[in-house]
Length: 327
Ligand SMILES: Cc1cc2nc3c(=O)[nH]c(=O)nc-3n(C[C@H](O)[C@H](O)[C@H](O)COP(=O)(O)O)c2cc1C
View 1 (tube, protein in one colour):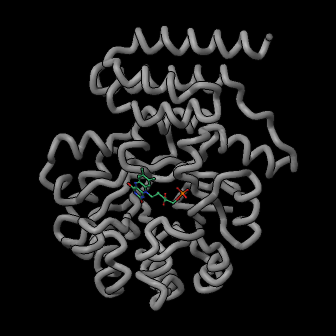
View 2 (tube, protein in one colour):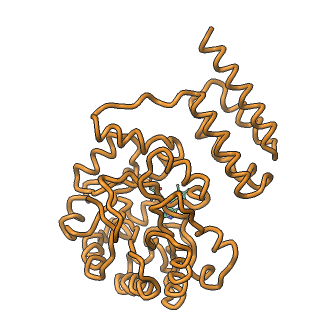
View 3 (cartoon, helix red, strand yellow):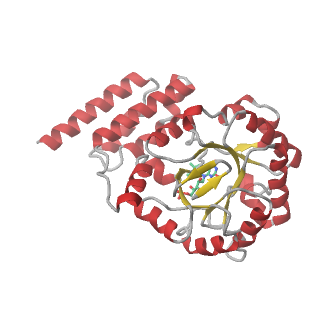
């Protein structure tokens, strides 16, 4: 059983925190399709502790997405503590600390995965967040900084000793970025290093079989990022597979286009129509992937800044796809 404070989940399949993706509309979509746990996008503690409106907006959570975590990053003790206090007042179920972001502007200044190079600082970050909240605190990180420093077992022991309530590991090093394959063979060793620390596996999990495999290797649950952008149905599909050993039918073209429209409308309602529509453009490639002539349709959708013409175009496209199937 995967347990964080009072939350108990059996083999959870979890939506990864993703900047500019895992906002309230997308979390809601994944939740409805079986995600057991969701996280906000990572948000900088300096901005939160200064009450910058954009940062506070990013870490808002809603009742119907519980259990939900707010994810923070940073390394200044006072800001971490203050941000944890402010985040806790927004009512998440727990606070997660990002100790795995690999991009230079974060890791290069010692935040995110930069903490893997300085475990004393890593521990200080965890303790600072804990000072600011009575909620459970969890950590998401990577295997180590580079091939020469796989510190994850030491990290797992340190986190357990500090009372951290769960650990997510993206099974790559900081220096790998997204290169190569995530190395799940680390999972048994991490579990052995801290047997009582609930462990979520992350990295390259895209199919129900992948979920079953990381559980077999000792993880208590699976966290899915890019695989969920491409296929928000993965959560229910994986859980069905775990329960029955069988696959659910793949969503139809109609299911995919209807969900695309629903996501677009929710995004427009959440951000205002024009911003909602323009910031949604990155999702068309995922929803329409593999459909006949989809790149032409996708390019034509980019011209619009309002929902109505996009809905008309997508419904027209669906009708054409339907005629082809019927022909
Ligand atoms: C667009 C995007 C944004 C991301 N933003 C975050 C973030 O805010 N916090 C975080 O911990 N990881 C972030 N990640 C990393 C993912 O949570 C995850 O660890 C990584 O993508 C590997 O998992 P996957 O192979 O299932 O995608 C992001 C990844 C992507 C693709």
